Image (cartoon, rainbow, N blue to C red):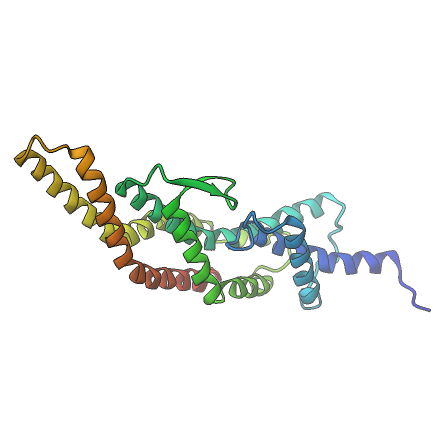
Length: 254
């Protein structure tokens, strides 16, 4: 007859629970996984399954009880570590969405909004288009699998100890926030330059022919040239998105 003690049972639960907390933190902020379209029970089940698969490879602290003050601190730290890993990758997607928002505003598509279930709000069309394109590229690069592998490897670099969260490179994460604007403007620059030249040409044309109605002529011209430039730049944007994603995926270990 199989027998076990309460201490053994709590040890088995802790060996699964701490990895589950860290992986759950990753799924709450990481691209693809944090999408509002995916039901919360599915995310929890996936995190629980992943934690169960790696529980035997993770050294769990036997001195920390789950239902204690130290256990609550451990829980918060594991959630922070997992959420930080997901947030690092999420910054690239925010930069890509910023690109679409900038281009839509300059083209005159700022009013073209639709409901985005991921953010539960109205979002610009071009921003959502580039966001879905980034998700497709991310899936093709197996980014979701690389992130799961990164959080599994984090149990070696950031073991389940009371001070694990303190060893995170917070300054590097803060500096990563500045890449949102640099990546966003880098991706949008060719189309923005084209639209700037178009607006300058329309300004000269208005000065040369004051009777010309700028609002009735300029808007369709700006929109047409912006869409043409956007279509030409799309393949190059895809290559840049892939490069930025690979760079961030390689930096997850930091």
